[in-house]
Image (cartoon, rainbow, N blue to C red; front, side, top):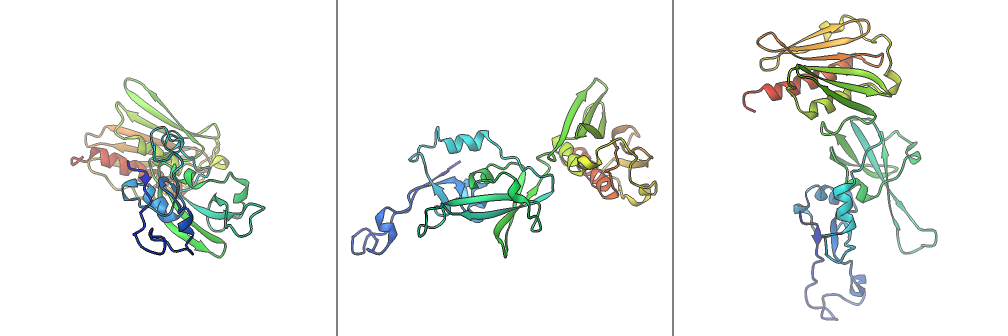
Length: 299
């Protein structure tokens, strides 16, 4: 993975014979080599996702004279994953310039990046600010489009099934005849996935189900806040050779997956007052999508 971006050489010429005129600030040192893991704007952050397409300009200066082995920036990128402290499918990262108290004409000292829930979020300063290097170390989130409004600029990050929901703890207990995956929020179980025999899914299904789980305010042992008529409203079409059945009860919602041999292959039980019709539909869609992907003959 190439991360060292060499400063381009100026064409020969000009009054000094080095391509610079006397009024150019570049004639007094230039900007130096750069590192593809130190973006300084949205476009450079996009290039840092695959450094083979990174080009000089828009990145921070190389701090180790081109010696990438043992560089603290590369070591941090490999070993320190930035965690997004918000449980949301999409977050807006605002970019803020800051200036040192004694600077007047030298421009901004650096950048602060603030993770927010969206354009209307005004309480983001209570959270820990990021650096651009922190943004480059985010895993499991896709970089979305850039954003601009009257308060400044920023960019969107969109969550994928490669990461679980923030605050949801997933535990697995395997036995000879079944495997159970428990989803807990605020130490209360809100979902239980029971797999008969071996699991027919990957870790992304567990993460996708955690995205649908309610927050701490809905994690309890109270009645499920969905009507019994939900079984008719929630659409669960067959996927490959698997059929799905939904059973709404006062204290839980059960979604059962049955294969072509009429054997139960998975059962998802949802409990707690935080489950709404939309959350149940999201959990059903995740179960259907991932079980269908595994059972598809083309895979």
